Amino acid sequence: MTAVIRAVDVPAAVADDASTVVPAIAGASFRDAWRELLSLPSVRSVMADSLRGETGDGVVENAVAVIEGLGRAGVSAGLCYALTSQVFGIQWPLSASTRKPLEPYVDGLVDGSLILCHALTEETGGSDPLSMRTAATATDGGYRIDGRKAYVTAAPEADVILTFARTDEARHPFALSSFLIPADRAGVTRSDPFAKTALTAVPMGAIDFDGVAVTDADLVAAEGSGLAFLSSTTTWERALLMSYALGGMHATIERVVAWLRDREQFGRSLGANPLVASHVADLATIRYRVRTLVYDMARRIDAGDTPLSALSTDAAQVKISCAHDLLTFETTAAPLFGARSVIADSGYAMDTTSAIAASIYAGTNDLLRMSIARDLGLPVAN
Ligand SMILES: Cc1cc2nc3c(=O)[nH]c(=O)nc-3n(C[C@H](O)[C@H](O)[C@H](O)COP(=O)(O)OP(=O)(O)OC[C@H]3O[C@@H](n4cnc5c(N)ncnc54)[C@H](O)[C@@H]3O)c2cc1C
Image 1 (tube, rainbow, N blue to C red):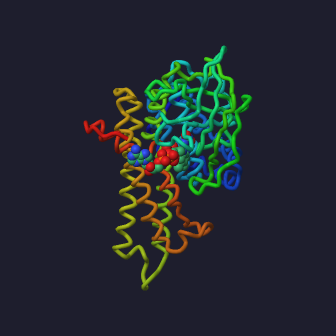
Image 2 (cartoon, helix red, strand yellow):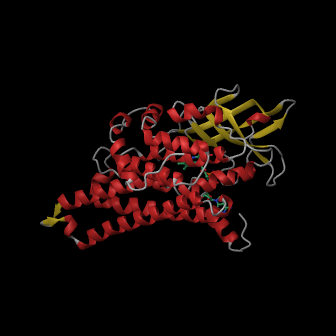
Image 3 (cartoon, rainbow, N blue to C red):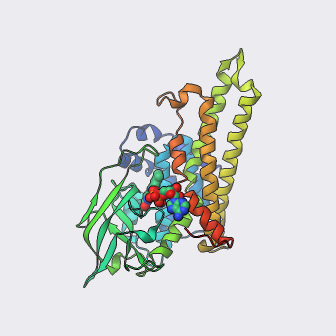
């Protein structure tokens, strides 16, 4: 287990370290950028920790801090998102499971030569997993998977795919199963990247499964436990995915302050205007709130006092709050830079579309609201 050095400011130390790879990452392909990122010892140790699947001793908190440091250094939101999603949404839950299905891939995942994706969504069944059409039909030696997943982060580059398929036609909680499948298995086709407008540094695409032969060994957990396993990946994601934005918020506040101090309008520094200054205070307050919520979840997972399943409602609340906050943050900061906020190479461009995406992925905010209300005792159905 990585020794977490609590005396040092981990995000600041990582930001310092990561500044050496930021120039090589800028303009590189996703795969090359990923390898650059994985050349950093701090990132490799997060990979190794997540692939052991253990929590405690501050390892989850350390992972959040490392990701925050990358964002502070200027690693793009898309790359930070891809890392956060792979570490928390795939590696930790898979490695914590009894079968430890990622064990054969550990070396390649730690050195960055292998990339994972989490393929759940379908054109016909985004918010409603039980309506998925991808089916694993029983055969003599296992199953045959047919179907198509869409809007999957990193799909066009992924080497190994975590996916979900029906093993029962009826609609009930045990109808789905989860599989881990190498992308070079016969019958698997990854699409070209979609031309997406948010988190552009990580590709998104579709995956077709055309008579893909899988065996029991490819099952992540027992047949029929796909929905239960999905609830562990989504709890991890909802609790911690917004780590990806922490460093970017920090960097934006620094940029805003420097800009407002130098920029003169009406014969004085823009930052001397109380209305303008109050917006900066709002940015700091939002960042403080998001940081507090995300680190609190990391510490609770590390503490291990509460089983992950009992954290799912809190994780949903954190996800909704942070998604709202991120959007408010970006739309508060953008006008402070004036026209430069919409000019790509101005150094002040703001990315509100990625913030909008936060209310969609890992469970849309509205569907999470309903599950929170259900948890409170309301008879609300989707
Ligand atoms: C940046 C990004 C990354 C993503 N990465 C992945 C990934 O790696 N893997 C993956 O599998 N998927 C991924 N997705 C897809 C994401 O999980 C889905 O977009 C999401 O689950 C919503 O599904 P949908 O797009 O089909 O919307 P729909 O399910 O069609 O929903 C559209 C709208 O209707 C609302 N709605 C639906 N049903 C109800 C209801 N009963 N009551 C009230 N409102 C309802 C929803 O809240 C939403 O606002 C990603 C999406 C984004 C934006």
